[in-house]
Image (tube, rainbow, N blue to C red; front, side):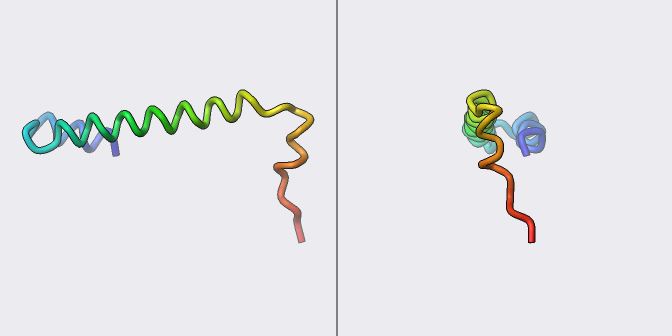
Amino acid sequence: MSQLLLRDATKAPELFDKSMKVYLNLAEAEVAKHYNFVKSVDVEAMESYKQARN
């Protein structure tokens, strides 16, 4: 999605520049959220994240 917005913003910055910046900020925040979650999980707690199988 970021790549598509960047391409559009390059062709028509008056239409897509703000959207691209907002989307990239949201994407960066999502990546940081996932990174911090993965880094904070203890190996011992991994058992709690496994799904029960039928």
